[in-house]
Image 1 (cartoon, rainbow, N blue to C red):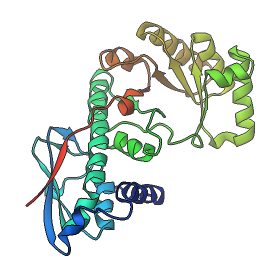
Image 2: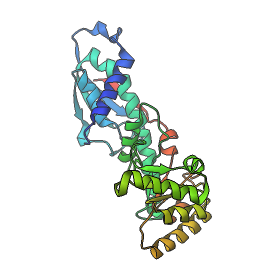
Image 3: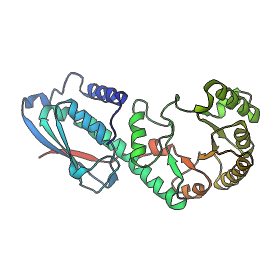
Length: 288
């Protein structure tokens, strides 16, 4: 089990406070009654969210028992019991909906991520799928955690992690290969060799410019599988001539249906739909 960060804990406390404010006025009628509740999944999925949900129930004084050692990243069948919660019934019910919402959203992302990674791994062993910054404001940390539970890479967690020169940065620096060269040079000057630099390339010319400027990662953006393959082959050949190692990433316009066409050409495929397109998984909580 991966421990929660202080940032995640603060968010969880805020979520619970936001839903119940000063308390659950309905459940208050239960007084000091104690209860035992089970959370069950309603469809096959990859579980994600055990850590935040355990914290939520713990924060209202309840104890949590995982079922058969199940944890985030485990594949579970329909109607499987995920965990059992014991404590004051009124407090458990206060946290119920927040907990189930988190499990639902995170497990949907983890399930879709596992499916995408399995497809890519079969087509090109070693190639990885990754998420993007197309996340829900206020819930990003947990969506990134769900990506990893599903076997995907989180990409950068926020704008402070790794430099990424995108089309608008390049345009603001004059555009084209010269804009790329200027951007990479300035970033290297500011942050030195310990900061990875990724460059978004819309064609082969920009890809070569990024390589020759010293980029660590080159994103081949919005290219067809054929164009992506041709650009990747040429960039790799040029990188050998320069005795440089570069990571190639594909992104833009990629779907579950054409993942296999991109996988053999690149090291990473970044997919925004892993977070914004994931269907939530159904869970229910019932008193024993």
